[in-house]
Length: 199
Image (cartoon, rainbow, N blue to C red; front, side, top):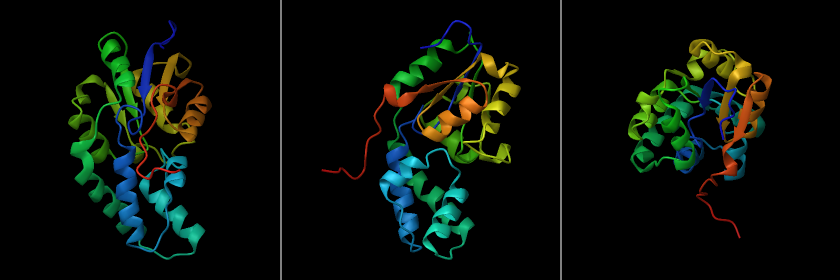
């Protein structure tokens, strides 16, 4: 899973290290419904890796609804914390981090906010594995732009071409490619649980 030439490994958090996507969707469903926005589960998964404020602004613009973007985003993050104790590790990916801790520099690069990302990693007893954590507050542009991954590589002191990225979304994998890094699609080893079961 980790090619020989790779010197640094960068992990997304939600849906990659942590099986948080069902909890995030439930928080989103409650927060958006309270403010007259629709956010179907399929759309939620298509926007994985995008910061909350950007998602609220996008949905409001598309649906012609006027909302307080900061208020909705803050409400969603508050609701997510209620479900955090139920979050589990994604074993196949966490095993990679555990296996390479101490031998290769490791980073987390997430579109989430620092408080939520660090709380998630702490909940799963993973926080100590990573030399650095880059979150939505650390770069002006977000996935699918490559900035968050490039910043993680810079902090690790590793050339982007020698970095492997573990990601679970199309926009995250696009960001890794645009950063000149190898991307591994976590969906090959983990299928996200759905809250709403279709069929």
